[in-house]
Length: 247
View 1 (cartoon, one colour):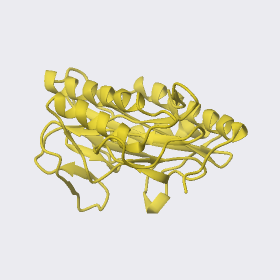
View 2 (cartoon, rainbow, N blue to C red):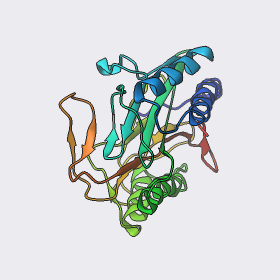
View 3 (cartoon, rainbow, N blue to C red):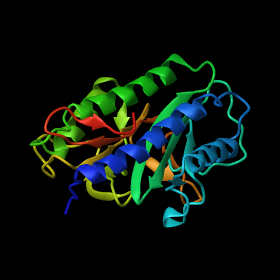
């Protein structure tokens, strides 16, 4: 069953997602060549704690860090290590927070210094895919409408959609029903209703959609070594326009 949130619960979700959004704004000031993924993780965790919340990724399913930091061909779940970012890298930061028992989640892909035109366009298309999906996140429509919109925009722009991982519902738990694939058919999947909260998160690749998992058991990479980008927000279904809680 997909949880429906009431007004008090939605207020709690607005509060925690505001912290997640602020953490993304905060970390942008540190993203330059030379900083390590481990240092980024520490900065994000310290900021979330300073706001009275806790990182919700840390220790979830035994994940060892507060953030997933995925560089270049890493798609998601990159474990932060003492590896310095370089000019021309792209880095996806995915993290969340929990406050008063309610969860927030958001991801962005950032350019480090001067990146190639194709890398910059990939980052832009990932964000555009999110907004194409968001336009379908309305009461009375279905999860498949979101999925189809994301896939269509990615493929129209020469990118592929990662199929092994998906978005998800979010609320009292970080991962709730429904699963929100980034590919699919219109009119399929769960019916969207006012009060649902969803983490919509396109993951798109410059090459093929196939992925593999590193020996660390977490880091997911493109099979062909091409770049990948990720863009995610926590979204509230309303009676009208969807609300981005983690903007």
